[in-house]
Image 1 (tube, rainbow, N blue to C red):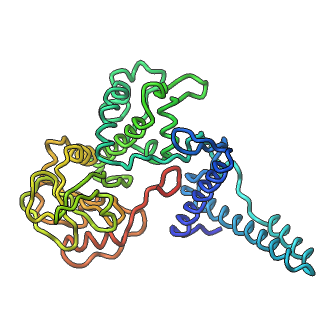
Image 2: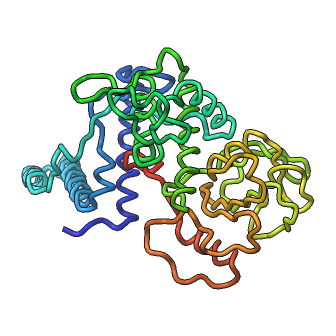
Image 3: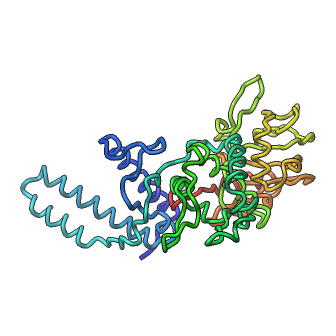
Amino acid sequence: MTSLSPEGLNGLLAWLQEAQLGLRALLHALGLAPDLHGQPAWPFAQRIAGEMLALDAGHARQVATSLACLLLALLTVAVSLFWRRARYGLWTGAVAVLLLAPWPDSRLLLAPAVPTSLHTSPSGFTADSIVRGQAVYQQQCLRCHGADGKGEGVDAAQLPMWPPTLNGSLLWKRLDGELFWRIRHGMQARDGSTTMPGFGQQLSDTQVWQVLDYLQANASGQTLQESGAWTYPVRMPDARVLCRQGAHRTLRELTGQRLRIAAEDSNLQDDPRLVTVHLGAAAPDAECQADVPALRTALALVVGVPAAQLAGNQLLVDRGGWLRARGQPGKAAWSVDDLVCRTTTVASAAPKGDGLDGLIRRMDDEPVRLLRGGFPH
């Protein structure tokens, strides 16, 4: 059985996620999915295992074929309501289609769920949220998980089990709502013993989401420093900026345009291919200005350097709002080697034009997409 194309797989995952969210909305409207932590709860003990679909394309093809068979059977039954003379034949055909469908193993199709599995972060991944989350982390989490998130804090050796690293797939591939649940309610080993206490009494919902924002930013910086790449896509932290003609905007409002974020670079020149956002003292050629201390701290975390060493760094943001390239201090020109967040698909042909043209072409031709729990995020 052939596998789905990357576009087909992404479409299937997006459709299944929308189906789950639609079911939750319907149950919420009927009073069967009450509000929990500000969003409708998921009332079932299981959810669709998007991570298995993303991992096993053959399994995804099987699920897609089964769904097509189910749709065909439903369409056949609908036709039979109006075509009475062929009703029994159509019913027989619908049953045959359902019997012949390659139904997937439920153990692969479904995964354990918690009431907040389908919750999404309301924080907006803002610079302010990241910085506030850093403060909470340092107060509540540092002694076990360590400053770098690798689980080697001063109290880690006293725990029944060493904390896992927060810089890898454990953090990045899980659904936001399930990470939220684990922080609030803790984690248990197979024998029921507590491996991480819950912080539902110490932290508000807002603080939990802020901690998750900080963990994502910090993990991005750690992986960039260790491997030279952002292994998983990370969004540009949002913040308010002042643009030309005195217009106050947020960086999120600039999504759809390519951005260049420059930290205190006095040699900036305006470039029509990019919207330049200067971080620090005013730069005459920058289209937008961001004198926001929280944004400096957030970007330093994402890059993995102390805030005092951020000056001279430049970051490129693609049209989708994802951080894609980093220009280090003192580097004279851009090249495709500066693309540190890459797609997993086949690379495009060798880019033409100067270094920045080639880099922009690669960014545009190879968009990235983050999956959490297997679903587009």
